[in-house]
Length: 219
Image (cartoon, rainbow, N blue to C red; front, side, top):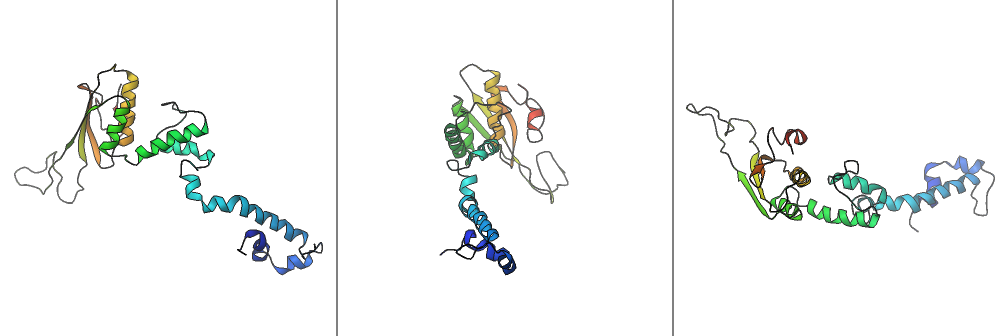
Protein backbone atom coordinates (compact mmCIF):
# COMPACT_ATOMS: atom_id res chain seq x y z
CA UNK A 1 0.00 0.00 0.00
CA UNK A 2 1.33 3.41 -0.94
CA UNK A 3 2.35 5.59 1.95
CA UNK A 4 -0.24 8.21 2.83
CA UNK A 5 -0.51 10.87 5.50
CA UNK A 6 -3.55 9.06 6.87
CA UNK A 7 -1.60 5.91 7.74
CA UNK A 8 1.80 7.48 8.46
CA UNK A 9 1.33 10.97 9.91
CA UNK A 10 1.07 9.83 13.52
CA UNK A 11 4.05 7.44 13.35
CA UNK A 12 6.24 9.94 11.50
CA UNK A 13 5.67 12.96 13.73
CA UNK A 14 4.77 11.58 17.15
CA UNK A 15 6.54 9.29 19.62
CA UNK A 16 5.31 5.96 21.05
CA UNK A 17 4.66 7.83 24.28
CA UNK A 18 1.59 9.59 22.87
CA UNK A 19 0.19 6.21 21.82
CA UNK A 20 0.96 4.58 25.15
CA UNK A 21 -0.66 7.20 27.38
CA UNK A 22 -3.82 7.36 25.27
CA UNK A 23 -5.99 4.73 26.96
CA UNK A 24 -9.11 5.23 24.80
CA UNK A 25 -8.07 2.59 22.27
CA UNK A 26 -10.32 1.21 19.55
CA UNK A 27 -10.31 -2.28 18.08
CA UNK A 28 -7.21 -1.40 15.97
CA UNK A 29 -5.28 -0.25 19.07
CA UNK A 30 -5.54 3.39 18.05
CA UNK A 31 -6.25 5.96 20.73
CA UNK A 32 -8.35 9.11 20.42
CA UNK A 33 -5.41 11.32 19.49
CA UNK A 34 -4.06 8.88 16.88
CA UNK A 35 -7.49 8.58 15.26
CA UNK A 36 -7.78 12.38 15.20
CA UNK A 37 -4.36 12.67 13.55
CA UNK A 38 -5.41 10.11 10.93
CA UNK A 39 -8.42 12.33 10.08
CA UNK A 40 -6.03 15.27 9.58
CA UNK A 41 -3.82 13.04 7.42
CA UNK A 42 -6.81 11.98 5.33
CA UNK A 43 -7.68 15.66 4.79
CA UNK A 44 -4.15 16.25 3.50
CA UNK A 45 -4.36 13.21 1.21
CA UNK A 46 -7.73 14.11 -0.26
CA UNK A 47 -7.68 17.92 -0.43
CA UNK A 48 -4.08 19.18 -0.47
CA UNK A 49 -1.80 16.56 -2.00
CA UNK A 50 -3.68 16.62 -5.35
CA UNK A 51 -3.36 20.41 -5.44
CA UNK A 52 0.36 20.19 -4.81
CA UNK A 53 0.90 17.36 -7.29
CA UNK A 54 -0.89 19.37 -9.99
CA UNK A 55 0.40 22.80 -8.95
CA UNK A 56 1.41 23.81 -12.47
CA UNK A 57 -1.97 22.90 -13.93
CA UNK A 58 -3.91 24.43 -11.04
CA UNK A 59 -2.02 27.70 -11.32
CA UNK A 60 -1.08 27.97 -14.98
CA UNK A 61 -3.39 25.99 -17.22
CA UNK A 62 -6.28 28.25 -18.21
CA UNK A 63 -8.83 25.43 -18.40
CA UNK A 64 -7.86 23.84 -15.06
CA UNK A 65 -6.61 26.89 -13.14
CA UNK A 66 -8.43 27.30 -9.83
CA UNK A 67 -11.13 29.93 -10.12
CA UNK A 68 -9.61 32.15 -7.43
CA UNK A 69 -6.44 32.58 -9.53
CA UNK A 70 -8.16 33.73 -12.73
CA UNK A 71 -7.98 37.39 -11.73
CA UNK A 72 -4.20 37.08 -11.28
CA UNK A 73 -3.83 35.52 -14.73
CA UNK A 74 -5.92 38.32 -16.23
CA UNK A 75 -3.71 40.90 -14.51
CA UNK A 76 -0.59 39.13 -15.78
CA UNK A 77 -1.66 39.68 -19.39
CA UNK A 78 -2.54 43.34 -18.84
CA UNK A 79 -6.18 43.33 -17.77
CA UNK A 80 -7.31 44.63 -14.39
CA UNK A 81 -10.97 44.99 -13.47
CA UNK A 82 -10.42 48.35 -11.75
CA UNK A 83 -9.04 50.06 -14.88
CA UNK A 84 -12.00 48.89 -16.95
CA UNK A 85 -9.89 48.99 -20.12
CA UNK A 86 -11.87 46.20 -21.71
CA UNK A 87 -14.96 44.18 -20.90
CA UNK A 88 -14.61 40.50 -20.09
CA UNK A 89 -17.56 38.20 -19.64
CA UNK A 90 -18.63 37.73 -16.03
CA UNK A 91 -19.09 33.97 -16.24
CA UNK A 92 -16.10 31.79 -15.38
CA UNK A 93 -16.29 29.65 -18.57
CA UNK A 94 -16.25 32.77 -20.77
CA UNK A 95 -13.38 34.30 -18.78
CA UNK A 96 -11.42 31.10 -19.33
CA UNK A 97 -12.24 31.21 -23.06
CA UNK A 98 -11.05 34.83 -23.37
CA UNK A 99 -7.86 34.04 -21.45
CA UNK A 100 -7.25 31.00 -23.64
CA UNK A 101 -7.07 33.23 -26.73
CA UNK A 102 -5.05 35.92 -24.96
CA UNK A 103 -2.47 33.36 -23.82
CA UNK A 104 -1.97 32.21 -27.43
CA UNK A 105 -1.15 35.77 -28.43
CA UNK A 106 0.99 36.18 -25.31
CA UNK A 107 3.34 33.49 -26.62
CA UNK A 108 4.19 35.85 -29.49
CA UNK A 109 4.63 38.88 -27.22
CA UNK A 110 7.48 41.11 -28.33
CA UNK A 111 7.28 40.13 -32.00
CA UNK A 112 6.01 41.74 -35.18
CA UNK A 113 3.50 38.92 -35.49
CA UNK A 114 1.85 39.88 -32.19
CA UNK A 115 1.63 43.52 -33.24
CA UNK A 116 0.10 42.58 -36.58
CA UNK A 117 -2.52 40.27 -35.05
CA UNK A 118 -3.56 42.77 -32.38
CA UNK A 119 -3.77 45.71 -34.81
CA UNK A 120 -5.79 43.52 -37.19
CA UNK A 121 -8.26 42.94 -34.34
CA UNK A 122 -8.85 46.70 -34.34
CA UNK A 123 -9.47 46.63 -38.08
CA UNK A 124 -6.05 48.08 -38.91
CA UNK A 125 -4.47 46.06 -41.70
CA UNK A 126 -2.12 48.64 -43.23
CA UNK A 127 0.84 48.31 -40.86
CA UNK A 128 4.45 49.30 -41.48
CA UNK A 129 7.05 48.37 -38.85
CA UNK A 130 10.53 49.74 -39.54
CA UNK A 131 13.66 48.78 -37.61
CA UNK A 132 16.47 51.36 -37.37
CA UNK A 133 19.96 49.98 -36.98
CA UNK A 134 22.95 52.03 -35.75
CA UNK A 135 26.65 51.25 -36.11
CA UNK A 136 28.86 50.52 -33.13
CA UNK A 137 32.62 50.92 -32.80
CA UNK A 138 35.53 52.52 -30.98
CA UNK A 139 36.46 56.15 -30.41
CA UNK A 140 37.80 58.03 -33.39
CA UNK A 141 40.28 60.87 -33.19
CA UNK A 142 38.30 62.69 -35.85
CA UNK A 143 34.66 62.11 -34.88
CA UNK A 144 34.87 61.23 -31.16
CA UNK A 145 31.56 60.05 -29.71
CA UNK A 146 28.36 60.59 -31.60
CA UNK A 147 24.69 60.16 -30.78
CA UNK A 148 24.43 57.19 -33.13
CA UNK A 149 27.44 55.20 -31.89
CA UNK A 150 28.29 53.35 -28.69
CA UNK A 151 31.98 53.08 -27.85
CA UNK A 152 34.52 51.30 -25.65
CA UNK A 153 33.07 48.98 -23.01
CA UNK A 154 29.56 50.41 -22.91
CA UNK A 155 26.59 48.16 -23.66
CA UNK A 156 25.10 48.35 -27.11
CA UNK A 157 22.06 50.54 -27.32
CA UNK A 158 18.63 49.12 -28.01
CA UNK A 159 17.40 48.78 -31.55
CA UNK A 160 14.96 51.54 -32.43
CA UNK A 161 11.83 50.95 -34.44
CA UNK A 162 8.90 52.89 -35.84
CA UNK A 163 5.26 51.95 -36.40
CA UNK A 164 3.14 53.58 -39.10
CA UNK A 165 -0.58 52.70 -39.19
CA UNK A 166 -3.19 53.59 -41.77
CA UNK A 167 -6.84 53.27 -40.82
CA UNK A 168 -9.84 54.07 -43.01
CA UNK A 169 -12.44 54.22 -40.25
CA UNK A 170 -13.27 56.81 -37.64
CA UNK A 171 -10.29 57.77 -35.48
CA UNK A 172 -11.46 58.07 -31.87
CA UNK A 173 -9.73 58.47 -28.55
CA UNK A 174 -10.76 54.90 -27.75
CA UNK A 175 -8.97 53.66 -30.89
CA UNK A 176 -5.83 55.61 -29.99
CA UNK A 177 -5.90 54.25 -26.45
CA UNK A 178 -6.28 50.70 -27.77
CA UNK A 179 -3.28 51.25 -30.07
CA UNK A 180 -1.19 52.52 -27.15
CA UNK A 181 -2.22 49.55 -25.03
CA UNK A 182 -1.16 47.17 -27.80
CA UNK A 183 2.24 48.83 -28.15
CA UNK A 184 2.73 48.82 -24.40
CA UNK A 185 1.82 45.14 -24.18
CA UNK A 186 4.14 44.14 -27.01
CA UNK A 187 7.18 46.37 -26.38
CA UNK A 188 10.32 44.15 -26.62
CA UNK A 189 12.91 44.42 -23.87
CA UNK A 190 15.77 45.34 -26.24
CA UNK A 191 13.82 47.69 -28.50
CA UNK A 192 13.02 51.37 -28.21
CA UNK A 193 10.09 53.01 -29.97
CA UNK A 194 11.18 55.96 -32.11
CA UNK A 195 7.79 56.98 -33.50
CA UNK A 196 4.19 55.84 -33.76
CA UNK A 197 1.85 57.39 -36.33
CA UNK A 198 -1.77 56.88 -37.29
CA UNK A 199 -2.70 58.12 -40.77
CA UNK A 200 0.51 60.13 -40.76
CA UNK A 201 -0.21 61.86 -37.45
CA UNK A 202 2.04 61.10 -34.47
CA UNK A 203 0.55 59.56 -31.36
CA UNK A 204 3.86 59.70 -29.48
CA UNK A 205 4.56 63.40 -29.11
CA UNK A 206 7.33 63.67 -26.57
CA UNK A 207 9.54 61.86 -24.10
CA UNK A 208 11.10 58.42 -24.03
CA UNK A 209 8.60 55.61 -24.47
CA UNK A 210 10.80 53.23 -22.46
CA UNK A 211 11.17 55.52 -19.45
CA UNK A 212 7.53 56.05 -18.58
CA UNK A 213 4.81 54.97 -20.97
CA UNK A 214 1.94 56.76 -19.24
CA UNK A 215 3.68 60.14 -19.14
CA UNK A 216 4.94 60.04 -22.71
CA UNK A 217 1.70 59.44 -24.56
CA UNK A 218 -0.97 62.06 -25.10
CA UNK A 219 -4.29 61.41 -26.77
